[in-house]
Length: 138
Ligand code: NI
Image: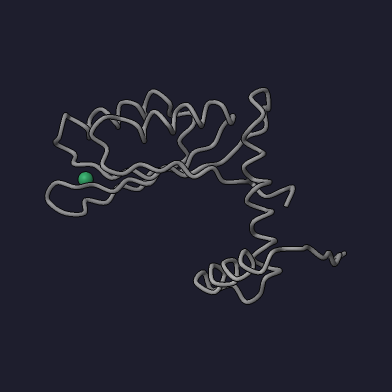
């Protein structure tokens, strides 16, 4: 069932919001607001340290494979946590730089610890951990 709600915003904030959603290509304010709410709900899924529900996430890494033996070290870390890694894609972007995308699944605390260890490894040029959702509650 779809419910209608009204919200009050000052005109400057609304103006900035409209610019933001136009830049992002939203068709209307409602869908943009629904997405903001969903994003907050997804983030909340990750906050309970005692939650055993399997969570999914994506880790993105850019690194030079021969710097500080990174190719080997990152592969070693992944083998040590192989139970959390569903799949990996490795692209050799040029002679030295690699892009790696990992799909992760497991307990929230384990995924966070492992994903943050990967993205914060010294020498990684760009690292992101995207905490996703299996979507049952949305
Ligand atoms: Ni490579």
